[in-house]
Amino acid sequence: MEKQRHILIVYPHPDDESFSVAGIAAMQAAMGVPITYACLTLGEMGRNLGNPPFATRESLPAIRKQELIAACEAIGIQDLRMMGLRDKTVEFEDDEKMVRLVTDLIEELHPSMIFTFLPKYCVHPDHEATARAVVEAVRRLPKEQRPTLLGAGFANNTEQEMGPADFVVDIRAFKEQKLNALKAHASQTGWMLQELDKREEDNGESTEDAWFTTEQFYTITFED
Amino acid sequence: MEIVNIAQLQKQLDAFANKEVYIHLETTNGSYAAHYDEQFFNAGAFIRNVKLVYEHAKVIEDHPNRVGLKLEHGWVYAQGITHSEIDEQGRLLMAGLDYSGKLAVALQISETPFAY
Image (cartoon, rainbow over all chains, first blue to last red; front, side, top):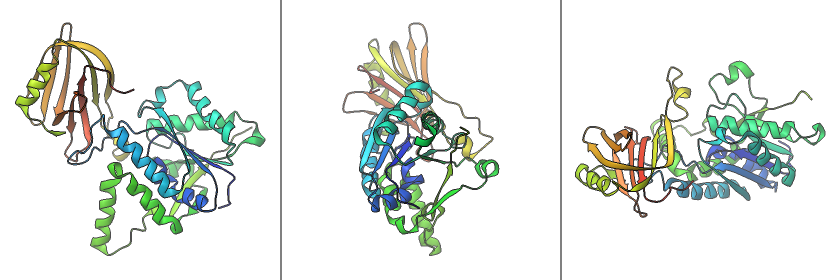
């Protein structure tokens, strides 16, 4: 993948970045590319509070904020913006306010590439709302000023309807950074990572899961 | 949060009766429920920082427990409460954690508004 001038990542939840784009971001950060991550919420409504619980509904945001900061450090994201929205309410925000939020970031940073979710194929209502706002903000730019726009799709019908992703990056060299980023989000990923470890013990197999091999996106294009 | 102690929780609920309090009430299956099971009908509700006064409250011991608040003109209740605590700000936080530990329901009572 080509070295970028500036990468902008826009996702609603702490850990969205680590699952979908941590490897690519670590790769570009290692090349010296500035990366801005606009994380819209602090995942306040997360259902994982630990088992037995170590967090409450009210203490979770502060915990996830620290996890987010640690994950960005693990990846090499230097510019983390926490945008102050509330988890699970993004789609109910004013549409123009959401587009403006993204437009302001684009006007400030002039990114050459933006990562977000793929509208209609990203499952969570906050993902959909985030993707809609980003796509609309980019659509409104003059054609020649539009950055490359990449959306992550993981709905069950994504491949069936959209075909295979067209932007696929081998991230095996950055597995460690991605694993550390996922580990940083311990309140949300703890069980998943335990399962990975267990599978490794059981099978003697490596955890060369799909997550640590490639990261895949769909290029979002515009008719005019 | 600790597993609900019924007598203690009843006392804590009683302490907020007949005061103006802020309520957080939430039920959820998680936003991925229908992603993992396409036959799943995903429903839930959420209110936060609605101010009210309740006349009395009752916790009904069951597995999981139920908590009801009787208002002058209505009701608030939550089913599935397993855990609770009084946090460092004196708020009563109750939650129902499912068999895998995930939050399924929350009912919280505070004399001051909860954060955003």
